[in-house]
Amino acid sequence: MEADKLSMLTVLDDHASDSIKVNELTTIGSVWPNAQQLQGDLLKGSATALSIGSSQVKNLVNQGTGTFGDTLLNGSNLLNSETAARINVLSNLLALCGSKAQSNGCNQLLKLTGSDDTLAAMTSIAREPWRNVKDLYRLFVKSYPIDPNTQLRATATKPYLLFEPKSFSLSLRFEGGGALALGKVMIDHKGNAWSGANWMPGSQSGVINSIGGGVTRFGPDGTAISPAITGYNGQGLNGTGWGTGISEKYAWVGTFNNRVGVFSLEDGEALGPATIDEPVGELQGIATARNGDVWIADNTSNHMIHFPDGDYTKGKRLSIPGLKGPFGVAVDDQNRVWVSSSFNNKITVFSAEEPDQTKTAEVYLGTRGIAVDSTGHAWVAQQTNSTKGAPGPGGKIPPGIPANPPQPKTIMQEFTAGAEYYIDNPKLTQTGSLAVISPDIKVVQNNVAEGIAYIPWGVSIDGKDNVWVGNLYGQSLIHICGMKPENCPEGKTTGDVIHNYQSGVIQITTDVVVDDAGNLWSANNWFEGDTVINKTYTGRTSTFPGGQGIVVTYGVAAPVQSPLMGPVRRTD
Image (cartoon, rainbow, N blue to C red; front, side, top):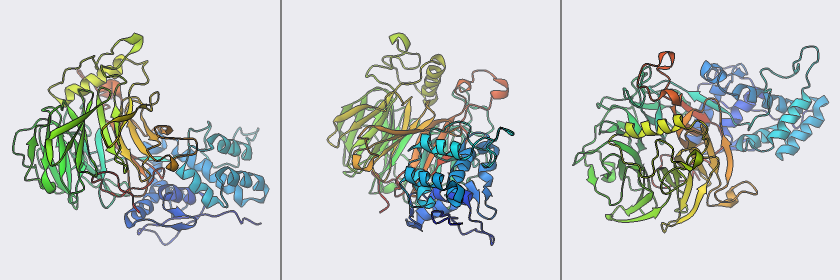
């Protein structure tokens, strides 16, 4: 039998066993984490990218047995996502090119993906898993018909999909290391993912009553490195919001109890808390500039904190005109600091050298994450579609986001208002969008992703200047065409949504970031939104408020160079 179009692969890491299998399943499990590094039958990329990609394969497949990997088989993933069934459909499609009787199906697969062999076909699907989904699923259904005697697709590997998927993306959830209700995610120079935890695992914490968590660290392969339950701490930290940052040597977190925690990137050793010259409030976003300066948003006291050269012993509190609940922070190539505010409709921009000289851009109320692309444009998430509040059902302003919201004294009070808004408006499925601001601080586009965005939160830029958004209540990751339409699919232009990624393992999410291999890491912040306001004991659901673990979605983004210092950096 000829199978000249059949090309398969097993990618190994440095812990490979002596016995290696190469089959359809290992091919899918190897391609997806390495999709952005595959060039034909070669793997090309930075050392960090190759380390990340090769180390993730074992989570999807066991290279020694040619079966599913342990992480995919655990209850957190197998029972909560389509990942296993999608892999089986993909592997069955690949197998069409290994059977003479299925030569027509093989040709269709290659035609749909514009490929010469199955390895190229799978690489194409991994990079753009939303493309031709209907036709690919129909090909599977046609090629593996139901046996009328058993009511099963007898020749297909089980479990398979019973319904057409939205895409063939593959996601896994990783847990442990103190990961509960994670806020902001950051990747360090070795591919480790760091995030501060709102609350402590195993506790009954929510926005009314809480025990704050520590700092979590996952290795490039998704293994939890920080200690279970508490995460890294040692500095008296009591919960982190959206304040996690990475500089050349340190991981930084801003906490709910008015401290800046500092940890060694090498071993997680507690080095802080950082020294600041004036008292500060509760803290949110953190950004590192190209020159190593670290900037932190003092959310409840309306200040910025500056650590020149990333020296955690020399923090300076700065009064910046116009800030009202500063939240997200980004630094551009001109060493200008961009700050979003929770409680006004302004984006504030100032030079690091002259912080008292500010400029502003007027956007919608309730901004969150902000990111600067390589062209100098800033992309900002907005919770509302109004400069005065979020229009609710019947044109009313819904509870939790009044027309002129007063700034609360604590971050948890703000989160309480958000949870009440979510619960009190169960029929509302969309509010918020993104704005694009030019380097000369003018809004050039607004209402980006309106209709899909539902309280968008974290914003990241990938290596092709396309945009990724953690869509909080939408429980999804939105992919948006950026300022370079030539890097977007045909027919898409700046501001268009390319795809909205969802999975059962992606919960109410506050952030999504791109690693050096082109994988997405997203933060599950809340689990069951209606239990987050835990004024009284809620029985069996009392430990359900916090989002569970961190999620990796494989191979769909253009790789970047980590850590993020200034605007996005490509790996090449």
